[in-house]
Image (cartoon, rainbow, N blue to C red):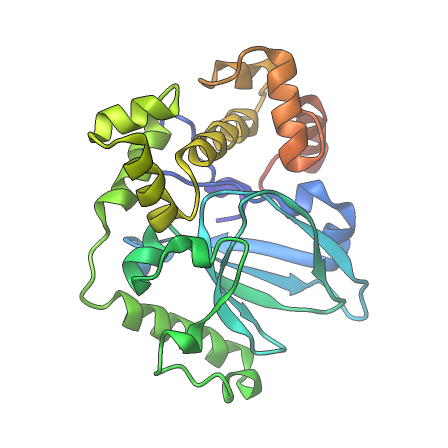
Length: 277
């Protein structure tokens, strides 16, 4: 499944965030290919696997656009051999991709990093946690010298080792519930969970690496993207997403996250054949 194909309609209870670098940066599409795939083996902890591969060599360096999605990824740089966990709190419009670079990984479900590692999620949000600092079975010195297929097998093996004997947490399930039926404000989350605001803040940062307010912002925006991804969508369709006051609010939010307006995104999708590559 491609990046945008991973987007399910806003009525789907499963959270499936959208990453669409191939629509947001024409230079990216000329030089790199982005793909996602569901991996049944890790369905409890990972939304998908993904990879960014060069289209042809020689190519040019580009700046990738990474949209905030509350996920922490297990990321591998195929050439440098750097492997670890990382997430983004806000859009990074200038994530450098050197010419010919290759990377791949697993997009973990919100809350999965803490469940798998026991570490607070905010350590990996806007940061990087090396895999070998958590998993003594991972040989970071040998990894760069492995062929591509073997690197992918090793990453799968290490994720399987981390997941062995573990079950998804209640906070992982909670994120799906919030996506399916997002509350209007932070106080509604606290009341539903029976926590004080201070407790809710602490637990969200621990499990998601984000405050409750930031989680609501990510959910609202990702639901808007899902509404805009529907074939034949109109810019105003995303206004039905709970949390937007009016059209200027929607336009400002979308432009802040992806750099273009809803109408511009729809035009790019239409010209490009939609979100499917």
